[in-house]
Length: 252
Ligand SMILES: Nc1ncnc2c1ncn2[C@@H]1O[C@H](COP(=O)(O)OP(=O)(O)O)[C@@H](O)[C@H]1O
Ligand SMILES: [Mg+2]
Image: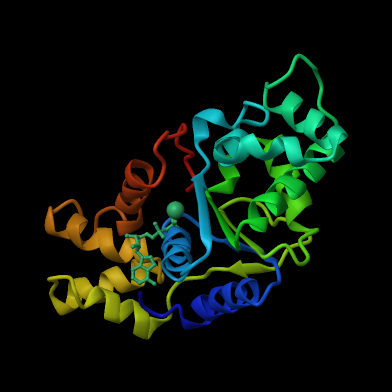
């Protein structure tokens, strides 16, 4: 990975804290292709003895209340019996495990915190949630509620999003790679100096753009004097980053 020393050291410090018996949360935020998933991969790679729970938000479930929590917690739901009864009932209601309708969001958030703490009783846990902008609002709310209350559970929660700022949690805001890192990444591509210059200018340090735009050039989809390369980039992002393309906005 090029040019992400600051970001990887923030992640490494968080994992060290968990190994030392503490907890913490981190939000990694940035545009498509900027390297959020790559940093989660780094975290997973550095997890060592931590028990990793990793899930990715999916656009088709954004409107399903508590679908995200179900995705994350399903493997550990057998542990709900250990929760304080009001929290257990609320969590089970939220996840469709009881006849009760209308789960209290406060109790669901507490239930998530207690359940993750129970899981961490068996050993330190690293929770990685990619593309949280696609989680349903109820799940995100409960997860953030829990994340803001982590103390000594030996639990780290790392969330990526391309969406809005998630208040109350430490954030790593990703911008483009600096010019040296971008040039190093592009060195792997077979381009003329002029093409290289053009790709560097258009990509603005976005790693996905740096990887994909050379292919766009090679296929002849870009012509000097024609549409800016970023128009081709838009096609790349819609086809590769978003598994469920939305109607295109004209002004991207
Ligand atoms: N710092 C980096 N150095 C080299 N390649 C990177 C770097 N960051 C991301 N990439 C690559 O760029 C592409 C897009 O990164 P990704 O993490 O999927 O972006 P995001 O999750 O923000 O949409 C992937 O192929 C990834 O491996
Ligand atoms: Mg990603």
